[in-house]
Length: 245
Image (cartoon, rainbow, N blue to C red):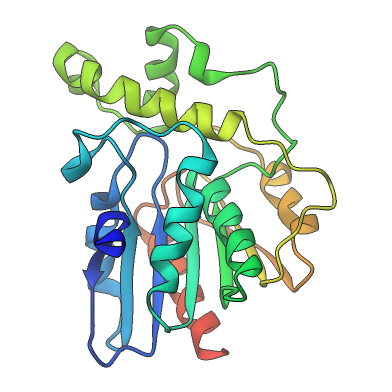
């Protein structure tokens, strides 16, 4: 039950040799990774993390602290003996990193961790809290990233539904603090979209110091959410990491 609650199987192969576990971007649910399944080859499972308070878990209270999420996700991953790669986009990058740290403690380190479109810890000013901005500013920021359409901005009902999720995810990552020596054991790749309107390449490459293993910085032709060709580039990288396991 815990596995089904936290991990949504967008591609599940009984003969799978490995799995990819994806962590969604700010305000999103597991469904954003559904279309990724068409690009995943046979023999690889694709799972996405579903956080409380959204999609089928909409009746549950939203989580705004990493401790409310990371142990449960790690336990759900450990329910399968398959080796895994973790992929986190935007706010999901911090979640994937902390889940990898937790898996290290459990002796189940991921084969590889990919953090995409997320600034490394301590590169964002602590007094710049998006979660505390007025609604218009918050959704203006999301619109600048292409996360919401002009039609959605005019739909008060949709904004009322989305706003608590967005603020909860932002509070979760804004409250995160990691000392400089905090690292994961797994190889780490940081992905930067050249069309990203929010981040600099330097903020993403600063993940370099967060692994005791191999580090790679990868720039792709994509926006903040890795749509289009950028997604395919990242998937090819994921496949190569699993092939080299």
